[in-house]
Length: 167
Ligand SMILES: NC(=O)c1ccc[n+]([C@@H]2O[C@H](COP(=O)([O-])OP(=O)(O)OC[C@H]3O[C@@H](n4cnc5c(N)ncnc54)[C@H](OP(=O)(O)O)[C@@H]3O)[C@@H](O)[C@H]2O)c1
Image 1: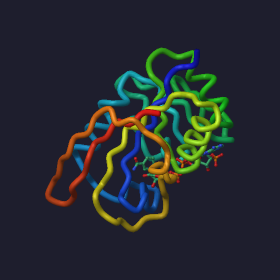
Image 2: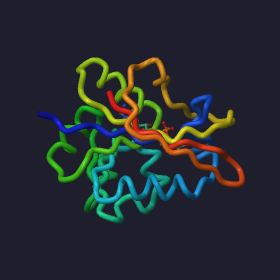
Image 3: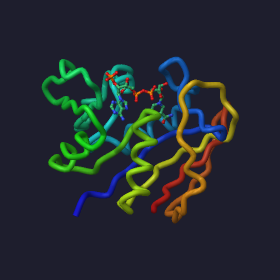
Image 4: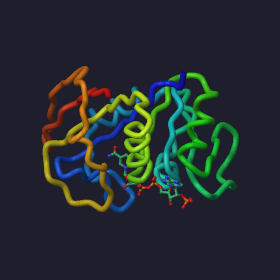
């Protein structure tokens, strides 16, 4: 029985998740949520996310980087050429499998879950704003989700809601 997949993302109402290789906002509460939720687990992520997250291998995280560049592998950092290969590695590691983006990896994960009926939990921080950006979360709202938890919050710049959804 394969492990439950967890997809974790912070996304604006217009589905923007990134701009110029960075997050398009600074929301300290969400950053803390993201770091706490991924600590101690396997994190599956694309090469740009890896390059822009220097502390990825701290706090017990086990990164599996999706890239064609096998030279990126080093102590504690595994590489895989495809999402399927990354998931095969992640299955052998302790802890949960947290899919951390970017865009294509989220899209392939949603497609995989739909095609195989593999259970998927979405840890979604929905930022209640239309934000300019160049990287997007694929549309998820048309899929049938069961809402597990919901918590609303805000800082001086944004209102946002933490959801846990499952299908
Ligand atoms: N708001 C959020 O929660 C969130 C989460 C994640 C990312 N982001 C934002 O999104 C942006 C980065 O994401 P991104 O989509 O541009 O890049 P990315 O997925 O981190 O990296 C892209 C690279 O990863 C590899 N790759 C990705 N998907 C692949 C696949 N399915 N199969 C094979 N290789 C694959 C390729 O590497 P090679 O070229 O090395 O082969 C590709 O060039 C940043 O702005 C970041 O801040 C936001």
